[in-house]
Length: 333
Ligand SMILES: [Fe+2]
Image 1 (cartoon, rainbow, N blue to C red):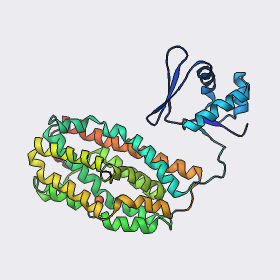
Image 2 (cartoon, rainbow, N blue to C red):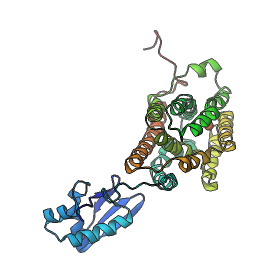
Image 3 (cartoon, helix red, strand yellow):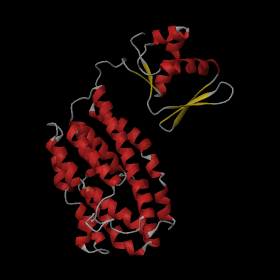
Image 4 (cartoon, protein in one colour):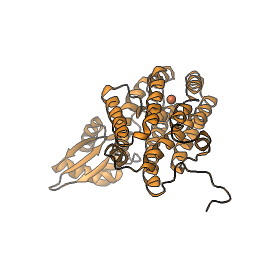
């Protein structure tokens, strides 16, 4: 029993209600406790950091280890609690990781899907600069594949190398597809000299840094980004199409830009990119807990960088309407 060190999941949130009730919110679900169980959990809470065994916690809060064991086991089944030492030496297969990844990613992408920018475009409230800024930043981000995919292939493990090399070869010129769309509105040399926002660079930089350090974790993070474009799910594709339709309606001058967005999604789908991550997961050796933690932390941070990317477009172009952003020169203020 002492070997089990219960730990409350990092993203779980404990909300205290009335009459000794409490709720633990985690991954879009809610576990509620009341009465004696809620009181016991409250007493245990300061020790649920994975550093103290159940026996040790029982001693500190003067409770029976059996009661603690029973409550932590039940909470463990709901997923809100983990046990640090319970899976010592245990490995999970790449396919199991793939399933875990799907569950987490769908939850972590939620704030991005809820970002007010989408609504602003769909209702026609976004400014011209915000809409074109979105197109430019997307171009800069896709152009970034040239950087991070090459770094990933160069630093890959033997199992990951063929997948990453193939993906790089297929993706490195996809920025050109976006550039063609922008050429309907801007001269080519202006597009080539345009500067990405710092928030867009932060996303590309984080991809490059992860690619150099952990090729599997990098791709797990890249997969989160790809899932916002080619989900393979008809319902999600419908909502992406609805977004483009609304954009065409309110901002007719973006017609060719949207054609480029769609041409890119079609190009990725033709190359079967929605299956690449599953193929990688099937070919890697089983993962240790540390490897799983590292990869999932990259994925989580990628979601945060993607949110920052959206925020950058939304806030910067609302205040500075000059499109595109030109590099600084001696005449810049
Ligand atoms: Fe692509």
